[in-house]
Image (tube, rainbow, N blue to C red; front, side, top):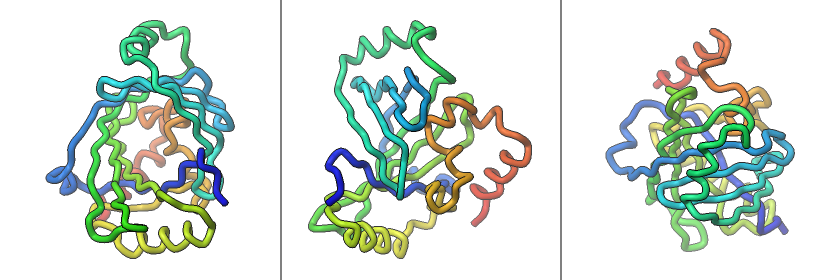
Length: 197
């Protein structure tokens, strides 16, 4: 049985902008109180909502996650005090696209596409959460269903369990070392992957 505080998701780089025709967006700003990848702590402002989140390290595409709502104005006020935080701010537009080609246990899934701004431009990442998963067999079945039905704009998979070097795409790592600070060969690899059709 998988822990109900676990977040299971598949992550991919996004190619092009054809997906934007059916997407709606909300702006997200987040800062980290702790950048320890084994137990990161962040404050997020998503539209007019605020959240405090604690995340454990990712293992087998699974994050341990606890999250509480906080007043949005408190989150905004905290952002005015950079001494409270570590690393760089993460700023992005998050788009939500329904996955209409299949369902899982009569539930519709959703793609979340993060279009990063500022220090992490032009990074764009698609995530799809594996919902209502109770066993490892169910996790494998839904993962296979998703991988067999990927939209055309979904590119290279960046789950670090399959590709250990891809941990750099996690938000906690982007806050430590954003794309603008990557080495030339890392930036070139990113551009090659998002431009490849």
